[in-house]
Image 1 (cartoon, rainbow, N blue to C red):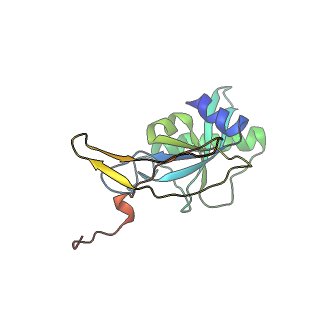
Image 2 (image 1 turned 135 degrees about the horizontal axis):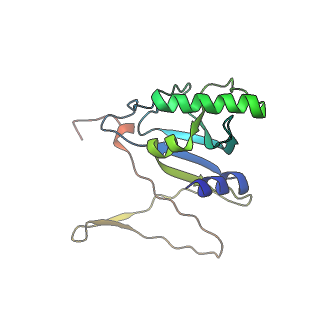
Image 3 (image 1 turned 135 degrees about the vertical axis):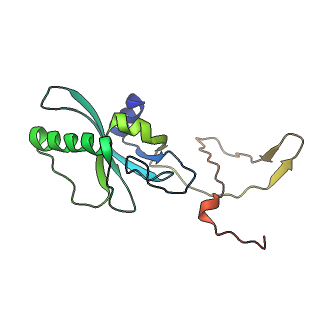
Length: 171
């Protein structure tokens, strides 16, 4: 996973986002201070050497809704990362709200998904809503489309998530 993140972020320059593990309560604060089921941006991945000459893998994340306060062991390890970045690399805390460093060992416990946004200079974005057919005996929904010109095609499927829509008892 570390190689995947560093390759896509550092070598390819792709944008990365990550989603924290969900809980039964939407966007509940986890023991670590991370908000459950919430998307964060991944801005940096570094291996740093602390004062004990240990290599620490760390990720710089951003909570787009603002400030992030880590708790417990996660907070302790993050504090150690900040101290090392300041002392050895002269990198200070970001003044912008929402940025924070997290130890990779805490990351893998609190996050479950990574999305890679591959940007291409000649990419043209088009959105099409497809007609769908329900096939009840298979328990699936089928959509069909035809690509009429040769080239690279990227396809994504989106669906409404209940937490983004108010409950309407009439529907």
